[in-house]
Length: 578
Image (tube, rainbow, N blue to C red; front, side, top):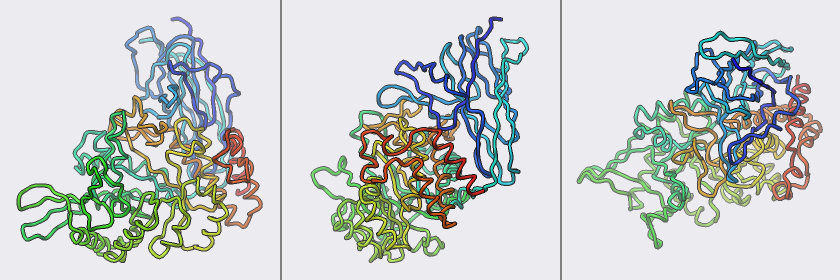
């Protein structure tokens, strides 16, 4: 059997493998010093990446099952981990970004991959350190065995590292004090996994996605209460095949006597599914406020319901003729809203309900919409993602949650700090989306940017983070997730696997670690150690002039992009709090 010149090195979890437009990796990425120590707390993750390459093509196996490549010349290399913690090894897939090059992102479910000669394979090693783990150092070893066809395995090489567990115990994700709100797009999951909307098969698909949201620490359920409230993100203007319309979870029937009845079964089933996994702090109801105008279907200024101040689309089955229609009378819409309010009251859920509005930009029409809503359903409280601090004083009597884009938080930093202090009973979050270019969660972004987002939330006295995406997939996201003119990764934190479950990503894990930074920094605040808190943040924050944060030409003038800085800060925070 021909010898295999095989090399292995380790990188921190925040490393991101890159390839050029021809999908070729640079061998220089193998040359940095290998990572030999992971520092973590308890109830924490201990993760790293393995980079593997050889002078000839080979099959790389991450479980004990046999694998025979179609090309019989390929030797098989099997990785076996010896560690005292529950562990998973996952192949990392490379995905195209906007400049035509590739970045590692998805953690694949398949345990076997074929690696071309001279190319680098990346493997994500994820270990779970339980809350009752005894603090101390734990040796771990990855052994690589090689075989060819039906010949016996031999030991090829091994790699050893240690996990240093600090005494600090992280709270469970649902109790971490970080209000993570990632909007869910259930209709898109039905399309991608080819199941009927709101069917048993659809809910079977939804369940693993909901679990992945809960594992990340999401606190909010996304409910859609009218048709296409985001206007499909204007997907009809996109060159890619990307149907992004979201549909109502509430069925409506108009009977022959003119009365309406409402079927809340799909909506409640989804709420209950989320609660099963601990996502039950807030229920965000979209489609009743600041509905985006559906210009493609209502051209030339036409409005489907001209006597109601918000252009919602409520579809119903008319029992008289068996045809589906849309509510046009403002009184019918008001009845619909009142009935929904009463449903949430009688089911004991009203305290968790927030009528959600997405980026209202003009105060006066939004005020008319909310006042009409409040007149008909006074028990409803609201939330909004907006870019105007003046909305807080204008809507504090109706809203409990205000979410500002990071541009506003940075550019009007001092003003917002005063606003936060003046409204201690409100919850203030921030978000990134299509912009800014940095810090962000794009596929092209440094993974430490997600770390920084958690750190910045603590620095700016924010209580959490929102992003509009989790599963806003185009028609073929595994091959090329580029959508519209957005940066790749803007639309999703996971990918759809063929088995109906989500493929987690490096960005998913990076956001999780960013939240852990927030927890550590907030622990310093709670102990009154404010000088230490500020000093810790300033180890990665490169400018105290917040007006420059997102406007510097080089992001390294705004925050550190060096993985080592964040690794050292994490270790020191754990030491300070242990």
